Image (cartoon, rainbow, N blue to C red; front, side, top):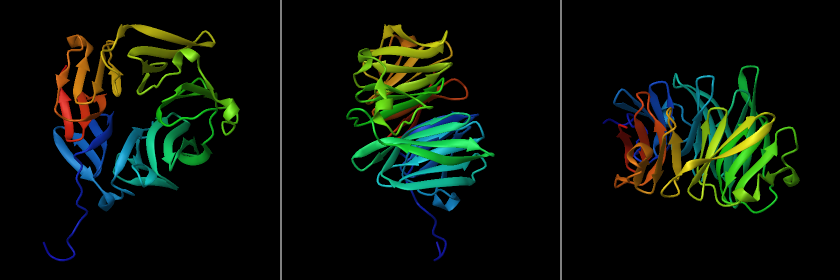
Length: 289
């Protein structure tokens, strides 16, 4: 290699978060944005317009864009389209970006800023996303935000101190406008997953579905109990549950008999062919169901 031919060399083995968009899996890794398509891997880095390569979180919007969040100590947010072009970068000097919720007209990201945590809000108007607000104050101590969802203009946060709710029409900078949904949901919520018309979360190895019906929120506990507290999970098209914990995969179709992988598992999604795709500290894992 001659002088002047160096490119950014990174290691994308540590897959921390992933999403499926069409027939491509997009992965936030410790070495850039990893794309997996038809058994072919591609890694995008700063050479390809990424603001940074140490990524922690990822999501997508309805406008063919991928959202990526930086890991500590560089908590930036970048919007990147599926044509591999950078659309926008939001760098507020935060420590890291941990989760996203992306809707049609509102986007939220949870962040860590030193010892503080909070939410950033964007709105979609005039064919672009624009920063709107930041929320840092809550009614009691919260050490981690592990999931964000919006249902019927209400923001739900799954935290280490339970499930919180706030209305978007209220001033969410005021901690009094946040509250626990119920004392029944005051333990740590480590995993949330969007489902049709609402979301699901795991609390004390029980799975609950939340949806809005007949002008009220409904909270439904599923009959099945999971064997361990999943760090991430999904509910497939036939309402079967798949989850991950530490180095093991658990699939309800197989009576939750653990599948050991020998790798630390970080995230799980369904591939375009219905197979499980799992991000680990040593790359991607595919499991046929």
